Image (tube, rainbow, N blue to C red):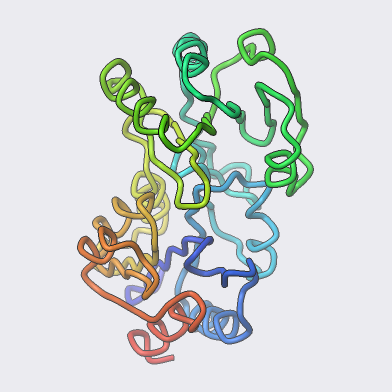
Length: 270
């Protein structure tokens, strides 16, 4: 490993991806140049692998990937690299579903790697989660789930989201971490406590023997906070939340203005 190599970690939605969910030609060109110059590029996303693999292939990556905000880390092209899958206890999941049902609940989804379980039938969400053609099971999760899960998503009425989050913090703080999705979705995402993108990125950095000061991480949302704090270059996108901008030590343009390419070109002299 060249001692001057940087590890570049890319969040997908709102960061690498434009609002239409594509990668711009300029971003692609500069990322390719970064790889040719010996830098290591990886993806760190809240998405499951099935809905991030298309971008992994498009960038022609051969590195490990962080999915589910760190709850699932693996190397798509090297089975010997190791798989880190940190799950939520099934009994806790069942308890959360039972309490959530007392609120104004639209649906609960559970994901086990690339299998998706819906508590209720839901055309709108089925559409959102169909990318990558997961195995989908519909029906009471307490009956249908037989193993610990990677992630749960609770889709509730806007006014009930905070009530459910308060319950999670009061009762399950030891075992779960939860975040709220950005508008327009009133969704609470739950993974195992202590999991975040920085944990996944650390595994990748230590594999390539890259120190923190040579890690460049880009993000825009709450689920990027730990990763941007961990990276030597924690770069907030121009469209990032205020909280992300406050935590980041660097800034760049928005996801619509090739913010990643703009920053890498300058800092790595590409």
